Amino acid sequence: MATPRVLPGFGISLGITITWLSLIVLIPLAALVAKSMTLTFSQFWEVISATRTLAAMRLSFGAAFVAALVNLVAGVVIAWVLVRYRFPGRRLADALIDLPFALPTAVAGIALTQLYAPNGWIGSCFVPGTTLGDATLWLVGPHGVLEAIIGSTGVLVDQEGLKLAFSAIGVTLALIFVTLPFVVRTLQPIIEELPQELEEAAASMGASRFAVVRRVILPELLPAAITGFALAFARGVGEYGSVIFIAGNIQGETEIAPLLIVIQLEQYQYGAATAIAVFMLCVSFALLLAINALQRWSNRRAREGG
Image (cartoon, rainbow, N blue to C red; front, top):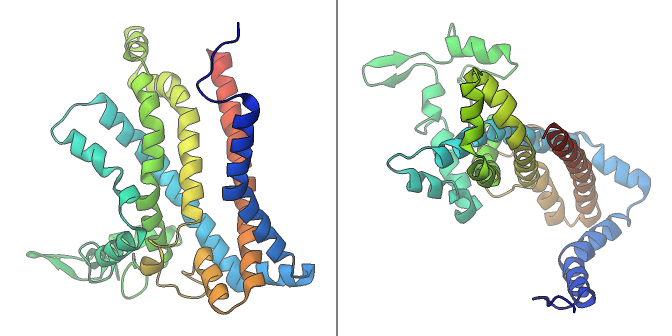
C-alpha cells in the first residue's frame, strides 16, 4: 500500500518547483547574461577591467568579507548568550537582532550616517580635540594613541581625524549592521540543540574552558557558522540602500559596485551595467561554491570525528 503524501506526486511537485524557480531566478539571470552578450568580448573586458569598476568591486567584496568575518565572531557570542543565559531584557535583545530585517535599508543608512558622521554621536569622538564633559580626548591626531594603532594597520588618518562615515570603514559598519541577523539566526537553533552534558562531561574530565570551546563547542557550531558567514557575505555584496548614504560615493574610493550599476543604467549604458552585474554574479557564485565546499568538508570531518 502506497504511503499517502501531503503534497501532490513527485511529477507535479517537481514541475511546480522548476516553474517557480525559472520565473523567479533562472529567467531573470538568463536575461541578464543575454543582455551582457550584446557587448563584444573586448567591450565586456574594457568595462570590467576599468579602474573605476575594479575599485568598486574591491570595496564591495572586501567590505562584505570583513563585515561577514566580524559578524562570524560576534554572532557566535551573541547567539550563545541569547540561548544559554537568562537575564532581564533578553527577549528584547533577541527581538532587536531582527531589526535590520524589518527596518528599511535607506532608513538604516541615514541613521548610521547621522551616528558616524564627523558631527554625529560616535563620529565626533574620532575628531582631534573632541571634548566630552570636562575631559579632552585626543583620540586621533598628532601624537594620538589611536592614530598610531590605526595608522599601523594602513587605514588613512588625516588631519581631520579618523573618518568613519564617508569612507570604507563606514561601508563596512553599514554591512555589519545589515548582515548580523544572518549569522545569529543560523547559529541559534544549533546552540539550542547542543546538549550541555557534553560540556559538563569534558569539564569533569579536567578539560579547561578553552579546550571545551575548541574541542567540543566549535566543531559542532562550525558548519552552521560557515553557513551564516556565507549568507552574510552574499547579502553584503549586493547591499545598496544602507550603504549609499554612509559611503559618500566618491568615485574610485567609496563607490560600491551596485551603485556603479545604477549609474550605468541612469546613463542608458545597459550593456555596461549588465556586464558589471554578470561579473559580480560570477565572482559571487565562485566564492559561494568555495564556501559550500568548505562547509561540506567541515561536515564530513564532524561525522568522521563523531
